[in-house]
Length: 231
Image (tube, rainbow, N blue to C red; front, side, top):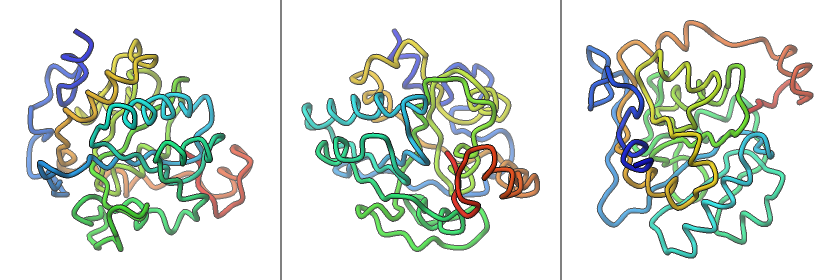
């Protein structure tokens, strides 16, 4: 079934290990979620229709109506902030790129650069268990995916575009079948069934070494101010 496939760690990655490690010791520890804890999900960046804002709304609506232990936070903004807030979603608003690692502090506060994030679970400032990238249009790279992994967050996305290809190459993350885009109940079930794992050894180090496109490029390509990071 789609859920059985989607809820497996590293779905569609037959050669990945069940622990999320591609050999060696992972660079970040991932805290497990307590039995009575809500799953805290970060959705990062400027989330419009092509980035899956309608998917997020549907998932939040279903979670609220079904009383699921699932809380979404948009670390950034969307094209429907007020609607999402009415459904219980936290929306932090625009951020400066230098704030992002602290904003995304993982559930134990660890960061890929060896520091500890200033994370306070439950108020939209860190404390997340995983990152959901709900884009419904194939992306060509996805800064958001890099930022999520660098912050120590396990990534979940649909199985299309560059994010899915990068996750395949890493043997890391959960890739949901594209058919689930219109099925918020199954998406939520897959998120709740997900067991986040630490990044494969060397992945965060490789991302840090690779760097990023310069700020002027981001500004011209996305139409954002130089200090603001796209999703």
